[in-house]
Image (cartoon, rainbow, N blue to C red; front, side, top):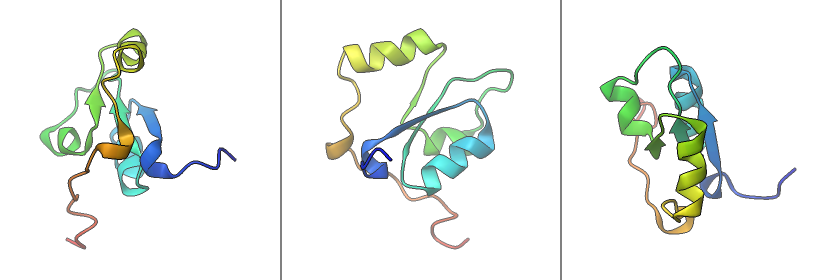
Length: 81
C-alpha cells in the first residue's frame, strides 16, 4: 500500500468507466484518450486531459497539479442522481 489518501493520487485512464471509478473513489483522474474522445460528462470529472504520456510527465515537471489545494466538483453520481 502507498499509505496515501486518494485525494493526493492521480489515476491515468483511457476509458470512460475508469475515469468514473477514479473520480468516485476520490482520486484525480487524468485521461489519455485512446480511441474515444471524452464526452462533456467525462470532461467535468477530469483533473486533466493529456494527448500522450509525455504530456503527463510535463504535468509533474511544470508543477501543474497540486492535489492538496485543488477542490473537486461533485458528480451527479455522488448526489445520488
